[in-house]
Image (cartoon, rainbow, N blue to C red; front, side):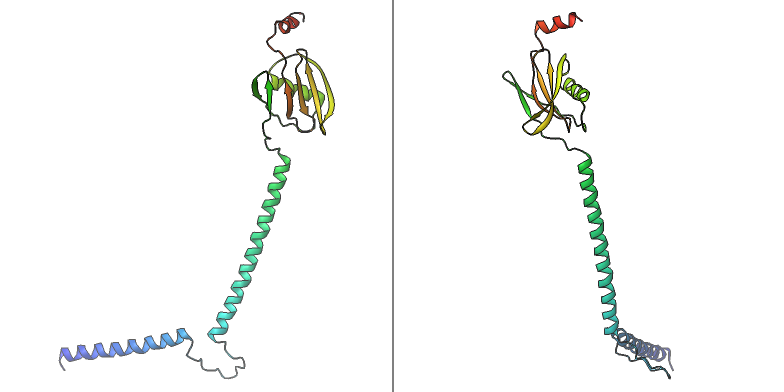
Length: 185
């Protein structure tokens, strides 16, 4: 036989083997090939649709568990954020106080459970300077606040719970009499 004939025969035989192998693989992949029973085997071998159902059920179970863990993590995060928010006082809106015709923003300070000395410190920090005449705990409009009065007639109300300045009436800080009071000390 010639080389040409041998080459054609080899190509035909290779094509035939590839077609047979491809069809067998395709049928196994689709689940059409029934396995041969082993002697003594009593359990039926599950088909691919049963396997798919089992895999789907396992997937749904794992998905439900993952969603539950995410929900628990979200709940813990929400609880932690609420706890953090209650521990730290967010900055309150800055109230405005009028001094003559000018509008002066009131600075706020956040201190927990104030004493009279701390209220004086907050009032002096707000004002910048001055001589304190007196301090008194009062209830104003349902709010416990320290009224810090100054020798120049100024008054600053400091919230006794949060330490925020809630009202300020600034006295005459640039008056000549004010400077004379410091000379007497």
